[in-house]
Amino acid sequence: MESLLDRLLQPVGRETFLKDHLGTGALHIKGSPELVRDLMSWEELSRLLSMSSIWSPFTLRVYMDRKPVPVNEYCSTALSPTQEEIQRPDSVKVQALVRRGASMVLNDIDKHNPALRAMANALREMTGGQVQANLYFSMRQRQAFGPHFDCHDVFAVHCCGVKTWHIFEGSEDVPVRHPALAKDDETLIRDAGRPSAIYDLRPGNLLYIPRGRYHDALASANGAVHVTFGVTMPKPLDLMSALWQCAVMN
Image (cartoon, rainbow, N blue to C red; front, side, top):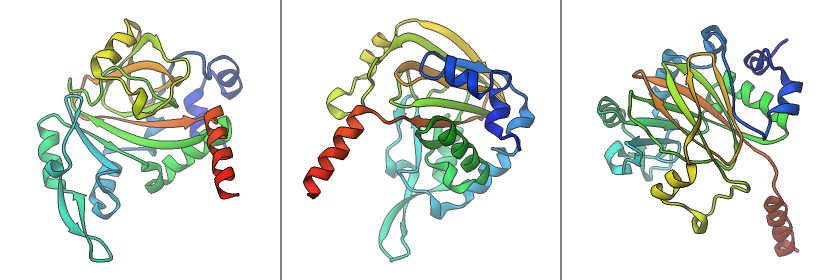
């Protein structure tokens, strides 16, 4: 049976994608809304958000105009199963922030949705990398993130609304995420350079961005939703870390 990944990659196909596009440049593939109907919908998003016990300040984050919202502004104190006090996202606070234009990011969402999990598994099989799925909900003309790059390959599947993506000229050849190498917003904007491509993503569209390529996105309609599947390929630093762990243990 043909997988959702195969349908989203049409008419390029897996073989051509791996040979000509993986790790080389951005690729926008247009598809129909029917492709993502079972992947994510408003009803499914509402269902997941209603499951308050699965979310924490680490798995549900809120951003306003490129800045993270402090945890105490969208979370309330709750009791864990062991009766310890913890912070948990408060639906009333989150909804109030969303009405003001805030964006939500739901991390590791493939753990809670079979269709997303199947998509992640298909990408893992195709690329051989580790895969994590995060959902992004954005309001019109309000950005969660400015120009930036990722240390993993990005497969963005658009599910609801319309969002405009900018792919910039700038790229990091060997992107590494480490506090010592972090850049401030001004430096990121400077290093991103000028836009080299602009894509309007609609439901059923797939956008691939190789790791290190600068990009950003801006919703052009309220309630734009996409799911990003981040694919992390093994790197030399991973081998060095594994060898160090082995040395320490032995």
